[in-house]
Each structure stands twice: as structure tokens, then as C-alpha cells.
Image 1 (tube, one colour):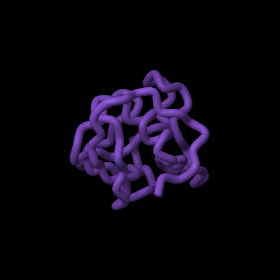
Image 2 (cartoon, one colour; image 1 turned 90 degrees about the vertical axis):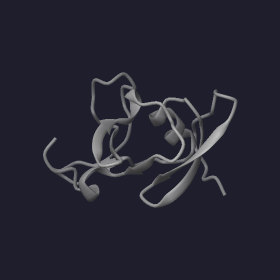
Image 3 (cartoon, one colour; image 1 turned 120 degrees about the horizontal axis):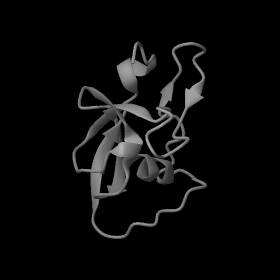
Image 4 (cartoon, helix red, strand yellow; image 1 turned 135 degrees about the vertical axis):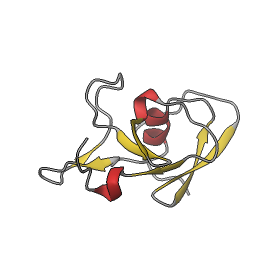
Length: 100
């Protein structure tokens, strides 16, 4: 069941499965990953290394780095990545962010 999200999906078309911290998400293929994850109900992408505060996309244009995620072992900005089937997405460095 899809969690409640204040974001609407604009993309239509084929959907693919990805995992985020082990949970399966069904996202629109080729959509912006950060926007698709927000629309799917993901509201915490990482936690800050300083205070542990939850973070999620803020600028959606690659400037703020609040949407950092680890995709198949590489830390990337989710707002700069397109959705592809089979992506294994995790909170960076096991959730503690570590050095960026």
C-alpha cells in the first residue's frame, strides 16, 4: 500500500521496481528519482552527520545536497538521477552520512 504523500505524480508510463533501504518502490521509469521517491511517500532520504536531523530534497536542482542517497554503493544526489529498474537505493553510509 502506498503511503500518504502530499506530492502528486506527473509522469505516466511504464513503472519499474527499485528498493530503498530494503523496501520495494514502484516508480515511473525515467522520472526524476527525488521527485518520484517523494511522490511514493519517502520523506527522509538521509540524516545529517552533525545533529542527526532528517533531510529530504529541498532545491531539486543539485545545489543543496539534502537529497543524497547511495545508489548501488555510490553516493549521489537523487534530484540529478533518473529512475531505472532494479536500482538499489539506501540512505548514505548506512544512514549516518559520514564524510561527503
